[in-house]
Length: 445
Image (cartoon, rainbow, N blue to C red; front, side, top):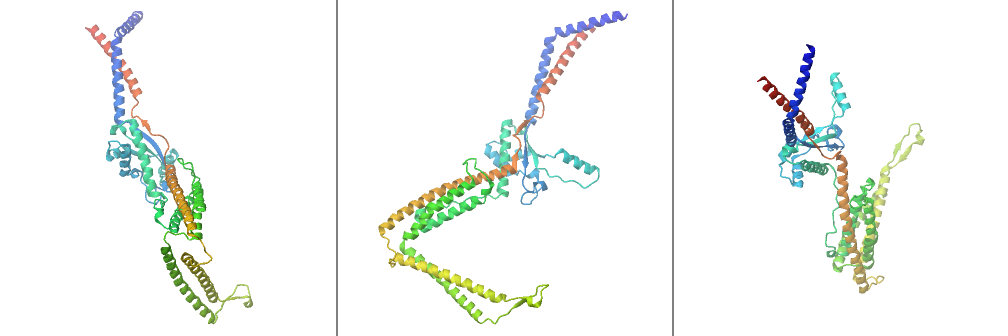
């Protein structure tokens, strides 16, 4: 009996294999159809739900306390403001609305596992609650909902981060620029006025560069440091500008002699007024010193006898110091007045010791104009380079404060290959099931 059942089973298995083999094309077609549908379904789902993401680290002072550098509260969910997104969209030139991008942009704080474990343990043990402010964040942009390609999403996400960094720099980082005086018409000023303008320009450059010279920053565009610009500026000061002021003072060069004399007379009047005031004050101080009756203060030092005490007169010393200061001021003002009076005499030709021909003055004036123009051109180039390196330095500072740790990557919601494999298996099972079902149905009939 058992032998007969075994023989029946073997025959049935053989028959089933033959049935499946005879309908193999049908089964293959069903399998392929299911696989295709699974592939299309996974692809469509990814297109609708796929995201592009990156990780950004934020390392400014205060972020670990949940604050911006100025002490205001840092809310990561509101960190990227709508106008930042608007600027990013305009920069990449995409037809998107700020609201749509904002609704499809997700910012997720990344909390290390050990911190999560500590927080969980504290909660379980009923201890003090642990507050943790993340410094690393995951940014996700749903390109499926925005109906843009993965590559477009990468570009847009990068631009959003760049605009966020620029906005942060504008708000919280001191952005220094060097004001450019060299764009003025130097020829419209007298020689000393032009010198003062350019000398002020050199001072502005030097101060701005010296404040950052210790940073060691090198411009990636220009290949120079802040110290290099200081050296270039100092050379202009020592050569071109020094020649200008030396020639002008030595040869009394001016474009308007009458105006310069008037200017010197005005300075003399101002200095004379200050001198008269100083003389009166000095006279008053002398009277107070001459009529001073004296008043001493005694200081007893612990551990010393009365004979060892210190006695001094502070007010009398103050009067003497005031008198000396006024005398020095009088001497300085007298010397300045004498200098301008001498200059006026020379301009009027009343100084026998100063003999300079008009031809010589014209020759020196030509040299001064050349030096002024050369200094103006050089300082103009230095200002341009200074503002370039300052802008790059500001960007360098914010790039370390707000920095992507990875390039934006496509993050599919579904594994299309897995979906296709499942479709193949399911299609094969459905095809085999249909063939066997039809076979048994025919036998039953």
